[in-house]
Length: 100
Image (cartoon, rainbow, N blue to C red; front, top):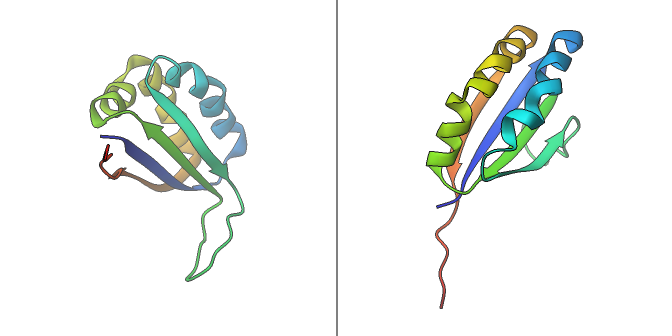
């Protein structure tokens, strides 16, 4: 089942965050994943949105997401994101595919 990683971040150190960004695509390329959105000014229809960046990633399944997140390549750049931003990362399941 498809899963989505959704990150909502407040970036407070752009130069350190740039170190994370510079290695991100290489860390993602060996997994069955797609970047669906990177947005710094989403349209807020309801409530408050105080985040400076929202990212949505799609993975073929939870196993691929876990392999990516735990990979040496991602773990090597992750400290840069954590040092440069605060936020939340959640994983949500996609809807089951029905082949009627």
